[in-house]
Image 1 (cartoon, rainbow over the protein chains, first blue to last red):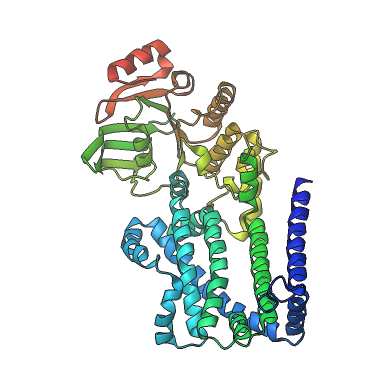
Image 2 (image 1 turned 120 degrees about the vertical axis):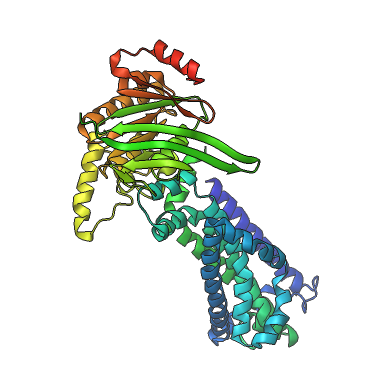
Length: 258
Length: 246
């Protein structure tokens, strides 16, 4: 009941804001060039959906972003597992990670353009770079947090190195790894859009910038709304997958929460 | 009872390298665990009992001396030695149900899975866990978790079962039940048991022999036969002499 009331209130607030925007724009209280009426934004969005531009752009963005995210996930989980399990690996990579991680990822774009040009490879690289660190650090934390008695039990039961990693370490660390993957999902979308805005000829980021440059302001807002919706759906999809794959973890947490 | 040693420790010593220099924990520990034996190890907290168990299980290599299991040197983790850790709850896999925890780590062919599951269920039933097979460890009480850990150790038919203060964190009633269970298992399972405990009642009522570790670094100060009418007071006085605490 409380959840439904909260959700209704939230939906009501959004509706109120949009209504206020619509009225203020039509009445001229807001500059209609900078704040086009809401109905014009929605019409522009519908048109771009019907003519296929939006679908093509979102598909291209998700393909590039998804490729970068996958590379980051494999590399981050792989290296993070080794670093979490072997102190010497962690100590070896720590100085480099500490130095490089604080760099804002967009600052790497010129370097990426220099080496990879302005095509898909550059965008995939930038996304992989940005997504790598949260996944790496969360994986290291998750693996280090595996209880020592659990690891020693695996040894005592005769599990070898790889079976211990596969059957004990990774499942135990999976909730923390999942947190890193979820954080990186948002980063993936952000850097995909940024890379497309800096040096792109396709994708949702390119569409947004092109709309701005050609003064199609209503369309620009429509593309931003579409981008927000994609982000929301990605996040919801991830949470649904997380709830399914880590059902044991969520049930355990609910049980331990008073 | 055959006198052949299942597990034999000869002059075992353990020195850890700490940040402030070497720390000798064990020194010249000689110990034999005969087939079918039930040996209790007591000593003051922090004297090295857990380290000794880990050495017996092959999880820790001693700095000196040798460990033999049925005459063969123990050089690494030894599946023939079952080990129940003090923090047993942390050794259960929370993402696996109870039966899967019992069967965890067993190397089995696909064709044998059914038979192993039946064996696991039968063992759990003997331990009063017949209703728990499909439940997760975190849905169960401490006593039930402890029995699952015991079942996991026993399903492998270990030659030696090592128990590190297994009943320290359960209530009195549960502890009494688990002690009875252990006594029954010792009678029916063909394995030797080594029990580290602070509970003198457990020593008197469960074990056949007790070894008192004392000194710093620890060594075997006394070895007593509990079958010869050893009382709690006598044991306590031996412990005090050896610097033990219970």
